[in-house]
Image (tube, rainbow, N blue to C red):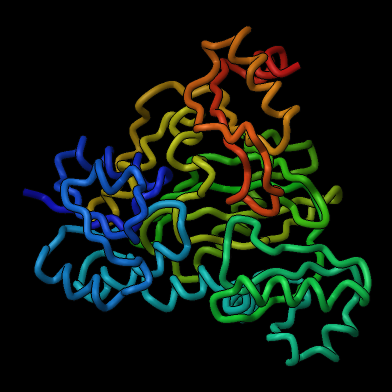
Length: 380
């Protein structure tokens, strides 16, 4: 029987587990045991932390899978790539994955290959402080190796630097922060699939955030609508150049970028993985009609992804719950337009903790509409 190793067992990984089983794969899932749904839906679950790369590799030599993959997780993708390379399976290089999961290494790579980047410095709280203090403000401070909007801060002047750097270093695995110039403009993401270095765009996503200083994502819409000055061929040229610079050859990628009022394109960062927040697993199939998860599995086992659409698509949107007003809006839509809600997570209605990053939001719901006009009618 065909076998697929999946790194991670959380709610966001479970659709991948179910898709693999639907495709006839025996699923072997590795994750820290904590009661996640994937522990139950997997054919075989191994209670091993996803950071234990060599232990997982050794166990996989006995499993002998056809592919190793994960979705929506930088940390999971680092391990998946390491294990796949160790087994001689289809995957990006370990160097590529490091550059795609470490923001400082990514900026260095972009600069080396002529991809436009803002000024940037790395620090552990002591190194490069003089150069950082001399930067043009405002600046963005974030951990070098975390995702999910963790400890991201826009700092307006030198007086806010120390606390922002300390917060970023504290959550960083390597205890380092990157400080960089601000990339101006409206934020989007581009969801791609790659095979043997050829990149195919599946969807463009419009992002909504809390804005400065922490930019916590509040929702996503597909497909994105660009203003007249935003020329899509130029956007794709910049994105493909950045993907090539990182050395992305196989699998999903999630490129976050901004476009200024004057049409300047700035790459924020790229994940060599499917976008989190249900972007890849739910929004892409709903809006563009592509079976993105099947594509991820196909490329992981060395097969060319199938670009045939499974439905005609539409407009899809995920909305996150950050406060009581967001929950009230969800209840209103559920009551008046239940046909538009495709899926909803469990909701933390107590809302006793502060929302400080993507991981601390209180829940989400996913919607689909025939077109953007219908979306605006429902949402008001």
